Length: 175
Ligand SMILES: [Mg+2]
View 1 (tube, rainbow, N blue to C red):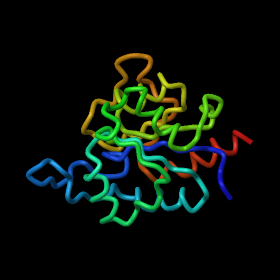
View 2: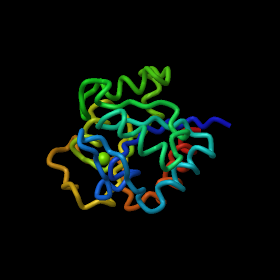
View 3: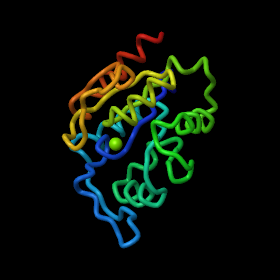
View 4: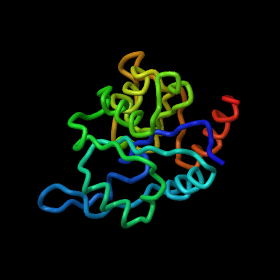
């Protein structure tokens, strides 16, 4: 059964370990490893009936390559990628694109979460857009300390496996 809660999710250091990325001469990612537990979590969310929308900065071909290799591409109902949109998070248009692709309206915002690792992009973008923000602080690559109130996440998790129970709780709270 389709769940009420809608998941927007980042890729780099949220699902994929950016430290393992291998790029070709054009800068396109041709290989990358998953963060431990991320693949299982994504599949479990998909199997539970959640709509999952990729909202990620990078090149379209990079995500095609990575998610074809790891076999998780089917988990994303839609893909919003900055190269195709023309701007990166926290730009509002990235979130609007994901809304449009999933036929979501303003009144649906209360049932949408954005999951990401970057307080300046994912968290500030979600907060400014008016959807719930979830920070995964697994990666030490970026500064996790909010530099302004809009960068403060609504929820913090430390590893991908913590996402499923949090999502289930937030979905139940909607009923
Ligand atoms: Mg990221």
